[in-house]
Image (cartoon, rainbow, N blue to C red; front, side, top):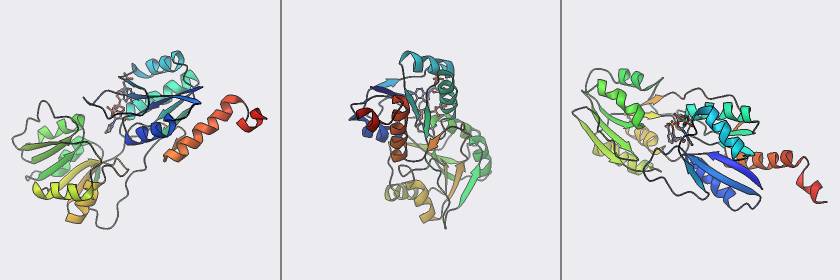
Length: 259
Ligand code: NAP
């Protein structure tokens, strides 16, 4: 039985695990960083928490006798992806990255692309705006330096402590978020600009489509650089890679071995 470790925390990781869960030739474990208080249920055994850098992950791959590593983390989770590349090379374990393609602007989108959260704060300008911050806990801290704006913050877990700004509202929720609901949210709070990552995929595209429909501008944080490793964009391609590696592992295609 081959042992597969999926680095997760994304819809794609869970969907890939769902497809692999029934396979009797594979023992699949999914790894979460442990960022959310009540992580979504997963279809395979889960381990939670950091490995202790690239060296820790390489040691884990060796002690757990992992045969293949799938990096299905979020496109903005650049540290774990770099660690995965380094650890897989050090441990001699095949690595595949499952990466969502970025969203691409279509007619009607009013996008402003910036490098990071401090640059997003700058591009909001001096005049007070009504801002939907669709960002993680780490990124929203930068907006404290612009307290003149109203902020609507959406997160999985409550933001504790709240931002030290005078005008902020908080909503909690776990995606997927549809266009109709996000349009209602933007209208209810009179939002005139959205700040978001270019996450790609369907689960969080609702706000981008809603902003377009309402003529609202979107500040998008550019994606971080990710390691140059074998990568695919779909779960089907990841499944094909796993089966290809099965043949590598066995030294010959299964059909030949069965003859
Ligand atoms: P990151 O900055 O790339 O990683 C920071 C550290 O967190 C890593 O060095 C590692 O600790 C640990 N870590 C990250 N992902 C892990 C995983 N799947 N399993 C075990 N340890 C993990 O990551 P991040 O941006 O904070 O994201 C954390 C998790 O949330 C990721 O799993 C990601 O898929 C998910 N997520 C992130 C975003 C986002 O916008 N960044 C959005 C949705 C979901 P050690 O060095 O100790 O191993």
